[in-house]
Length: 64
Image 1 (cartoon, helix red, strand yellow):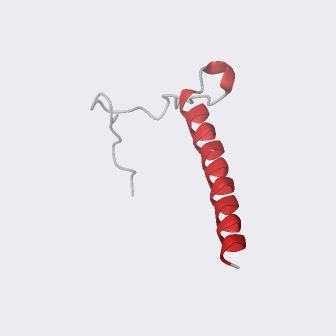
Image 2: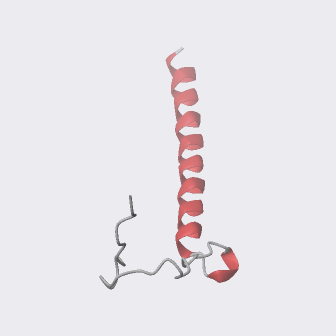
């Protein structure tokens, strides 16, 4: 059984088997905007969790 014809999602044109797949780098040197934004999000989440845990400890000390 033959594999069905594949079409490009961006152009709608048929894709040849010989066409190379485009690879996009996520290195910081190549811009990496999305990766940097994700790393910033993770860092902010860690800081927020730390502040939350400190607040909980303070409330627990005050209530005892």
